[in-house]
Figure 1 (tube, rainbow over the protein chains, first blue to last red):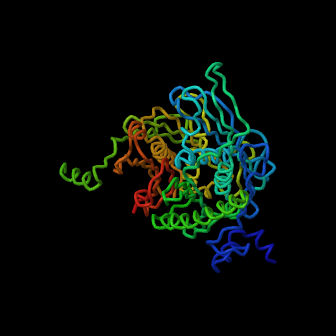
Figure 2 (cartoon, rainbow over the protein chains, first blue to last red):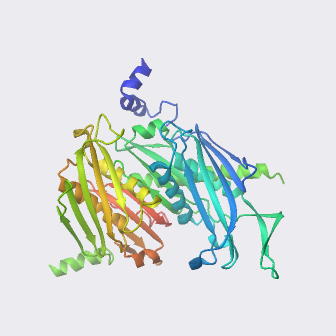
Figure 3 (spheres, rainbow over the protein chains, first blue to last red):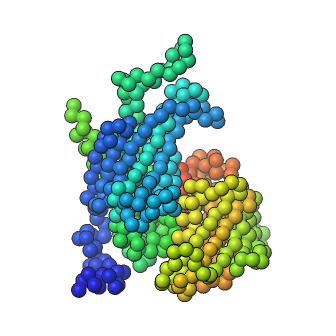
Length: 276
Length: 200
């Protein structure tokens, strides 16, 4: 009976649950799905991480290459993020060139990197005007069950914390670069941005960490990115039903709390892989 | 009258919008069109629909909204795609699409010149275009960009130069009946206190 009801009136089905302050998967409105992170899962990448938010699975691999810096910013390297939503991860997506959602997610991740200054691009410069690192951050979704932005931002941060770059010196005589693969240094992570997403139901109700089903039924989403100092790196509300300033403030407060949890988790995982 | 205006400007902390203007119905082929100017930034909007749906995008319970953002030069890239999504979802919240099921509404925005606050100008042009086409709307909306300069002062409707110098740039779309936030996107970082210079 319940399955038939859900099939015919999915929104009404959800409302019955929300009225009782819970969701069909047993969570409360402000409860996140179980978050797991595995760091260094891809051995061939310079840094990698796999993040799971409930069923949503995202893997991020960072590949470092050497290139000449741009002429107008000679002391800076590059960070090139890309989010892929292949047809493998959900029936929503088709193979071929990236769709609107994948492109919007890529732009969001690029904005988060730029806004939060997660890495100072000057740190990626090896020789001023001659040589700099390019970090290709490929974020691939393996299983799409909503809240791709939170999972992607988390996977990116975890993968960047895992990056080990070989030391590079420029030979004075030949002018060629010499890569010392034996001596590896971690990247300096300046900020730890963490994204928290909310779905808006019936113009007023905010539910945290929406699943794909909830995202489809909701009338809008909000994503707030904060760093460890509680500064806002992004308040992203791409249209949808209007919210009052108070509700947005509420989202920000909850995002700051979530940041602490995620930071604790990532610190714990990094500690566990370096038993010293 | 002039004194009153000065008072308003002073109350806003010296914030002032650049002169803006709008012209509607200037194109003959689309069902609705509008040009919106904010200082030297200008965007032209053309709106087609409700019309027949092309391809397999048809929705049985409401109209499909499609937004195309054309840059001044070159082909649309990832930034345009991400802005198209912002604009589409903003318009979807306002257009009463349920009144025109199984149809498509296409909004084409052509950037004519960019001198700062481009996204808010696109939002305003989109709203005026929807209005000119006579589509059923639940409310109107407007876009506004504000920049925080290095001293923390708020500059409304910044120019390109002010945007480059700014520490943070926040763009909002606000609906008309209750002045709620329809859309927000930010660039740069700011503290929680100064960030939500969110509308009351």
